[in-house]
Length: 304
Picture 1 (tube, rainbow, N blue to C red):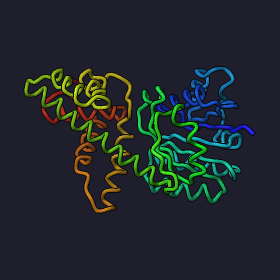
Picture 2 (picture 1 turned 120 degrees about the vertical axis):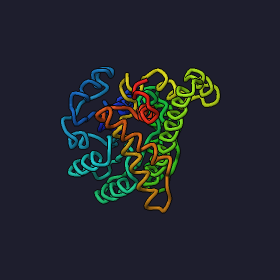
Picture 3 (picture 1 turned 180 degrees about the vertical axis):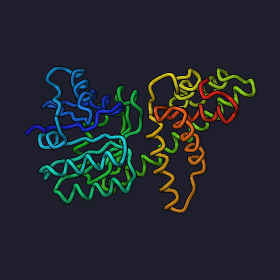
Picture 4 (picture 1 turned 180 degrees about the horizontal axis):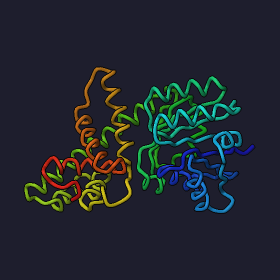
Protein backbone atom coordinates (compact mmCIF):
# COMPACT_ATOMS: atom_id res chain seq x y z
CA UNK A 1 0.00 0.00 0.00
CA UNK A 2 1.43 3.39 -1.01
CA UNK A 3 2.09 6.12 1.56
CA UNK A 4 0.24 9.39 1.11
CA UNK A 5 1.96 12.60 2.23
CA UNK A 6 0.60 16.01 3.15
CA UNK A 7 2.47 19.27 3.76
CA UNK A 8 0.92 21.96 5.96
CA UNK A 9 2.61 25.39 5.84
CA UNK A 10 4.25 26.38 2.57
CA UNK A 11 6.26 29.42 3.65
CA UNK A 12 9.72 30.28 2.33
CA UNK A 13 11.28 27.22 3.93
CA UNK A 14 8.43 24.85 3.15
CA UNK A 15 8.38 25.69 -0.55
CA UNK A 16 11.92 24.48 -1.11
CA UNK A 17 11.31 21.38 0.98
CA UNK A 18 8.19 20.49 -0.98
CA UNK A 19 9.95 20.97 -4.32
CA UNK A 20 12.67 18.53 -3.33
CA UNK A 21 10.20 16.11 -1.78
CA UNK A 22 8.31 15.92 -5.06
CA UNK A 23 11.45 15.80 -7.20
CA UNK A 24 13.44 13.25 -5.22
CA UNK A 25 11.11 11.63 -2.70
CA UNK A 26 9.79 8.82 -4.93
CA UNK A 27 6.20 9.71 -4.04
CA UNK A 28 3.65 7.32 -5.50
CA UNK A 29 0.79 9.79 -5.02
CA UNK A 30 0.47 13.58 -5.33
CA UNK A 31 1.76 15.62 -2.39
CA UNK A 32 -1.20 17.26 -0.66
CA UNK A 33 -0.55 20.94 0.09
CA UNK A 34 -2.28 23.23 2.56
CA UNK A 35 -1.53 26.79 3.59
CA UNK A 36 -3.64 29.26 5.56
CA UNK A 37 -3.34 31.59 2.58
CA UNK A 38 -4.60 29.19 -0.07
CA UNK A 39 -3.05 31.20 -2.91
CA UNK A 40 0.45 30.32 -1.70
CA UNK A 41 -0.35 26.61 -1.87
CA UNK A 42 -1.86 27.05 -5.32
CA UNK A 43 1.19 28.99 -6.54
CA UNK A 44 3.51 26.27 -5.28
CA UNK A 45 1.39 23.55 -6.85
CA UNK A 46 1.61 25.41 -10.15
CA UNK A 47 5.41 25.33 -9.96
CA UNK A 48 5.51 21.58 -9.40
CA UNK A 49 5.26 19.02 -12.22
CA UNK A 50 1.71 18.36 -13.40
CA UNK A 51 -0.08 15.71 -11.39
CA UNK A 52 2.51 15.71 -8.59
CA UNK A 53 0.55 17.80 -6.08
CA UNK A 54 -2.97 18.67 -4.97
CA UNK A 55 -4.20 21.61 -2.90
CA UNK A 56 -6.43 20.90 0.10
CA UNK A 57 -9.06 23.42 1.13
CA UNK A 58 -8.65 22.72 4.86
CA UNK A 59 -6.33 21.12 7.38
CA UNK A 60 -8.86 18.39 8.06
CA UNK A 61 -9.02 17.55 4.35
CA UNK A 62 -5.24 17.34 4.13
CA UNK A 63 -5.04 15.14 7.22
CA UNK A 64 -7.90 12.84 6.24
CA UNK A 65 -6.30 12.08 2.87
CA UNK A 66 -2.79 11.42 4.22
CA UNK A 67 -0.73 8.88 6.13
CA UNK A 68 2.21 11.15 6.98
CA UNK A 69 1.56 14.83 7.68
CA UNK A 70 4.48 17.28 7.63
CA UNK A 71 4.00 20.64 9.34
CA UNK A 72 6.27 23.67 9.00
CA UNK A 73 4.82 26.88 10.44
CA UNK A 74 6.21 30.10 11.88
CA UNK A 75 5.67 29.93 15.61
CA UNK A 76 4.23 28.07 18.59
CA UNK A 77 0.78 29.63 18.32
CA UNK A 78 0.40 28.66 14.66
CA UNK A 79 1.59 25.12 15.35
CA UNK A 80 -0.75 24.68 18.32
CA UNK A 81 -3.70 25.86 16.22
CA UNK A 82 -2.69 23.61 13.32
CA UNK A 83 -2.41 20.45 15.43
CA UNK A 84 -5.55 21.25 17.41
CA UNK A 85 -7.49 21.45 14.14
CA UNK A 86 -5.80 18.34 12.75
CA UNK A 87 -6.76 16.30 15.78
CA UNK A 88 -10.41 16.97 15.13
CA UNK A 89 -10.07 14.42 12.31
CA UNK A 90 -9.62 10.68 12.67
CA UNK A 91 -5.85 10.42 13.05
CA UNK A 92 -5.32 6.95 14.48
CA UNK A 93 -2.38 5.29 12.76
CA UNK A 94 -1.19 8.48 11.06
CA UNK A 95 2.24 10.04 11.59
CA UNK A 96 2.82 13.75 12.22
CA UNK A 97 6.26 15.19 11.44
CA UNK A 98 6.90 18.74 12.59
CA UNK A 99 9.71 20.81 11.05
CA UNK A 100 8.88 24.05 12.88
CA UNK A 101 11.15 25.83 15.37
CA UNK A 102 9.22 25.99 18.64
CA UNK A 103 9.79 25.81 22.38
CA UNK A 104 10.60 22.28 23.62
CA UNK A 105 7.60 22.41 25.96
CA UNK A 106 5.33 23.12 22.99
CA UNK A 107 6.74 20.07 21.22
CA UNK A 108 6.28 17.85 24.29
CA UNK A 109 2.70 18.98 24.82
CA UNK A 110 1.80 18.37 21.19
CA UNK A 111 3.48 14.96 21.24
CA UNK A 112 1.31 13.98 24.21
CA UNK A 113 -1.89 15.23 22.53
CA UNK A 114 -1.10 13.45 19.25
CA UNK A 115 -0.19 10.14 20.87
CA UNK A 116 -3.35 10.24 22.98
CA UNK A 117 -5.31 10.26 19.72
CA UNK A 118 -3.54 7.11 18.52
CA UNK A 119 -1.20 8.83 16.07
CA UNK A 120 2.60 9.02 15.95
CA UNK A 121 4.80 12.07 16.21
CA UNK A 122 8.38 12.83 15.16
CA UNK A 123 9.93 16.21 15.89
CA UNK A 124 12.00 17.18 12.87
CA UNK A 125 13.27 20.79 13.07
CA UNK A 126 15.80 21.74 10.42
CA UNK A 127 18.93 23.88 10.21
CA UNK A 128 19.17 26.05 7.11
CA UNK A 129 17.45 29.05 5.52
CA UNK A 130 15.22 29.10 2.43
CA UNK A 131 18.09 28.94 -0.14
CA UNK A 132 19.47 25.89 1.70
CA UNK A 133 16.03 24.29 1.54
CA UNK A 134 15.82 24.98 -2.20
CA UNK A 135 19.20 23.30 -2.66
CA UNK A 136 18.13 20.26 -0.64
CA UNK A 137 20.95 20.82 1.85
CA UNK A 138 19.07 21.10 5.14
CA UNK A 139 20.19 19.34 8.31
CA UNK A 140 17.34 17.46 10.01
CA UNK A 141 17.12 16.78 13.75
CA UNK A 142 14.88 13.75 14.29
CA UNK A 143 13.50 12.70 17.68
CA UNK A 144 10.78 10.27 18.68
CA UNK A 145 10.14 6.52 18.73
CA UNK A 146 12.82 4.77 16.61
CA UNK A 147 10.31 3.00 14.36
CA UNK A 148 8.61 6.30 13.55
CA UNK A 149 11.91 8.11 12.97
CA UNK A 150 12.82 5.40 10.44
CA UNK A 151 9.64 6.22 8.49
CA UNK A 152 10.82 9.83 8.14
CA UNK A 153 14.45 9.23 7.18
CA UNK A 154 13.74 8.30 3.53
CA UNK A 155 12.55 11.87 2.96
CA UNK A 156 15.58 13.56 4.57
CA UNK A 157 19.16 12.80 3.44
CA UNK A 158 19.40 12.93 -0.34
CA UNK A 159 15.88 14.32 -0.71
CA UNK A 160 15.20 17.43 1.38
CA UNK A 161 18.50 17.47 3.24
CA UNK A 162 22.16 16.53 3.35
CA UNK A 163 22.35 15.06 6.85
CA UNK A 164 20.41 13.90 9.90
CA UNK A 165 21.15 14.35 13.59
CA UNK A 166 19.49 11.19 14.86
CA UNK A 167 17.93 11.44 18.33
CA UNK A 168 15.88 8.25 17.95
CA UNK A 169 14.49 7.13 21.27
CA UNK A 170 14.83 10.59 22.81
CA UNK A 171 11.79 12.66 23.70
CA UNK A 172 10.55 14.83 20.85
CA UNK A 173 11.31 17.95 22.88
CA UNK A 174 15.05 17.17 22.68
CA UNK A 175 14.99 17.95 18.94
CA UNK A 176 13.41 21.34 19.59
CA UNK A 177 15.88 21.97 22.40
CA UNK A 178 18.80 21.32 20.06
CA UNK A 179 17.25 23.53 17.37
CA UNK A 180 16.71 26.47 19.72
CA UNK A 181 20.19 26.05 21.19
CA UNK A 182 21.72 25.79 17.73
CA UNK A 183 20.00 28.98 16.64
CA UNK A 184 21.77 30.87 19.44
CA UNK A 185 25.02 30.13 17.57
CA UNK A 186 23.52 31.78 14.47
CA UNK A 187 22.51 34.84 16.49
CA UNK A 188 25.96 35.14 18.04
CA UNK A 189 27.64 34.70 14.65
CA UNK A 190 25.61 37.56 13.17
CA UNK A 191 26.27 39.72 16.23
CA UNK A 192 30.04 39.13 15.94
CA UNK A 193 30.03 39.88 12.20
CA UNK A 194 27.96 43.02 12.74
CA UNK A 195 30.34 44.37 15.34
CA UNK A 196 33.36 43.47 13.20
CA UNK A 197 31.97 45.14 10.07
CA UNK A 198 31.08 48.25 12.03
CA UNK A 199 34.52 48.43 13.63
CA UNK A 200 36.16 47.94 10.22
CA UNK A 201 34.22 50.90 8.82
CA UNK A 202 34.75 53.19 11.81
CA UNK A 203 38.50 52.55 12.04
CA UNK A 204 39.18 52.81 8.33
CA UNK A 205 40.18 49.15 7.98
CA UNK A 206 37.40 48.77 5.43
CA UNK A 207 34.71 46.11 5.22
CA UNK A 208 36.21 44.64 2.04
CA UNK A 209 39.42 43.83 3.87
CA UNK A 210 37.52 42.30 6.77
CA UNK A 211 35.42 40.26 4.37
CA UNK A 212 38.57 38.79 2.78
CA UNK A 213 39.63 37.58 6.23
CA UNK A 214 36.20 36.06 6.88
CA UNK A 215 36.20 34.30 3.50
CA UNK A 216 39.53 32.63 4.18
CA UNK A 217 39.08 31.71 7.83
CA UNK A 218 35.33 31.15 8.11
CA UNK A 219 33.91 29.81 4.82
CA UNK A 220 30.23 28.91 4.82
CA UNK A 221 27.58 30.74 6.86
CA UNK A 222 30.01 33.36 8.19
CA UNK A 223 31.05 34.32 4.68
CA UNK A 224 27.45 34.31 3.41
CA UNK A 225 26.26 36.64 6.15
CA UNK A 226 29.34 38.84 5.81
CA UNK A 227 28.52 39.24 2.12
CA UNK A 228 24.89 39.97 2.99
CA UNK A 229 26.01 42.78 5.27
CA UNK A 230 28.72 44.15 2.97
CA UNK A 231 26.42 44.29 -0.04
CA UNK A 232 23.43 45.72 1.84
CA UNK A 233 21.22 42.69 1.22
CA UNK A 234 20.17 42.83 4.88
CA UNK A 235 17.84 45.70 3.97
CA UNK A 236 17.69 45.66 0.14
CA UNK A 237 16.47 42.10 -0.40
CA UNK A 238 13.71 39.87 0.93
CA UNK A 239 14.65 38.58 4.39
CA UNK A 240 16.20 35.14 4.64
CA UNK A 241 14.90 34.94 8.20
CA UNK A 242 12.36 37.49 9.42
CA UNK A 243 13.31 39.50 12.48
CA UNK A 244 10.06 38.54 14.26
CA UNK A 245 10.93 34.85 13.99
CA UNK A 246 14.51 35.52 15.10
CA UNK A 247 13.22 37.28 18.22
CA UNK A 248 10.87 34.37 18.86
CA UNK A 249 13.81 31.97 18.83
CA UNK A 250 15.93 34.28 20.99
CA UNK A 251 13.07 34.52 23.46
CA UNK A 252 12.77 30.75 23.70
CA UNK A 253 16.52 30.42 24.29
CA UNK A 254 16.57 33.13 26.96
CA UNK A 255 13.59 31.57 28.75
CA UNK A 256 15.28 28.17 28.71
CA UNK A 257 18.46 29.70 30.10
CA UNK A 258 16.64 31.50 32.88
CA UNK A 259 14.59 28.45 33.86
CA UNK A 260 17.73 26.29 34.01
CA UNK A 261 19.77 28.79 36.02
CA UNK A 262 22.21 30.17 33.46
CA UNK A 263 22.71 33.24 31.28
CA UNK A 264 23.13 33.71 27.54
CA UNK A 265 24.66 37.18 27.61
CA UNK A 266 25.60 37.25 23.93
CA UNK A 267 22.04 36.29 22.99
CA UNK A 268 20.72 39.03 25.26
CA UNK A 269 22.80 41.57 23.33
CA UNK A 270 21.73 40.14 19.98
CA UNK A 271 18.07 40.28 21.01
CA UNK A 272 18.45 43.94 22.00
CA UNK A 273 19.77 44.66 18.52
CA UNK A 274 17.01 42.58 16.94
CA UNK A 275 14.48 44.75 18.79
CA UNK A 276 16.04 47.86 17.22
CA UNK A 277 15.94 46.25 13.76
CA UNK A 278 12.35 45.19 14.34
CA UNK A 279 11.33 48.75 15.18
CA UNK A 280 13.31 50.26 12.29
CA UNK A 281 11.86 47.92 9.66
CA UNK A 282 8.32 47.60 11.05
CA UNK A 283 8.89 43.85 11.58
CA UNK A 284 9.69 43.27 7.90
CA UNK A 285 13.43 43.12 8.44
CA UNK A 286 15.98 40.35 8.28
CA UNK A 287 17.89 38.71 11.14
CA UNK A 288 21.02 40.36 9.70
CA UNK A 289 19.40 43.68 10.58
CA UNK A 290 21.41 43.24 13.78
CA UNK A 291 24.15 44.87 11.67
CA UNK A 292 21.97 47.92 11.08
CA UNK A 293 21.31 48.22 14.81
CA UNK A 294 25.02 47.96 15.67
CA UNK A 295 25.74 50.63 13.04
CA UNK A 296 23.21 52.97 14.62
CA UNK A 297 24.86 52.54 18.02
CA UNK A 298 28.09 53.66 16.38
CA UNK A 299 26.49 56.80 14.94
CA UNK A 300 26.05 55.40 11.43
CA UNK A 301 22.88 54.94 9.38
CA UNK A 302 21.03 51.63 9.62
CA UNK A 303 21.61 51.18 5.89
CA UNK A 304 25.25 50.94 4.81
